[in-house]
Amino acid sequence: DETNKENANGNNGTQQPAQDEDEDSDDDGAGSASSSSSSEHEWEEWEPPQIANWMLSLDSKYKKYDKVLRKKLAEEEMHGSLLGELDTNDLDRFGIKSLKHKKQILIELKKLTKQPLPEDDTF
Image 1 (cartoon, rainbow, N blue to C red):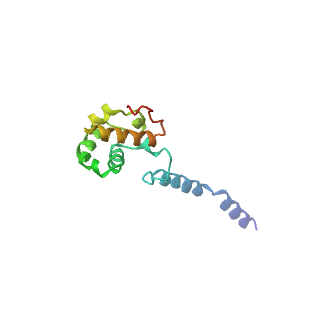
Image 2: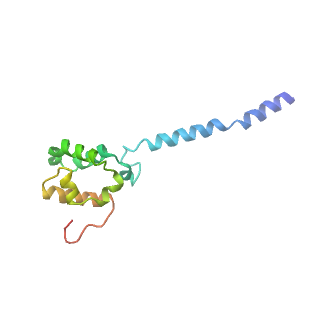
Image 3: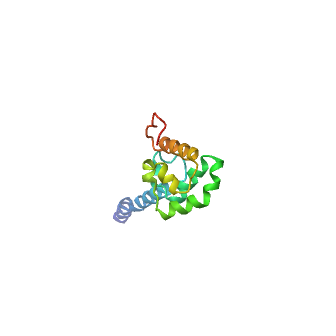
């Protein structure tokens, strides 16, 4: 009888593997940043390729900026946490030359980062 009690107590006391599984599942959740519904502020963690993908997805006309945009974003080590601070000068440096395109992208950036749009349409 005592041996059975020890085995029962030993089994009840070994709950550590469940904690390890929880840690693994947290890692899996954080790794799914590509899912648009994973987090409202996932853009804050974007790296240059994700930023470029997002900008290029806004309008098929922006495809012409693909190569230079990716290059410049990487060179400047652009990070999602900085998206709310961008202005037309930044976009120009990133290779986006059309003023119309710059304004459209900045409007989308303001929406993404939940910042108020300027009333006078100036950036």
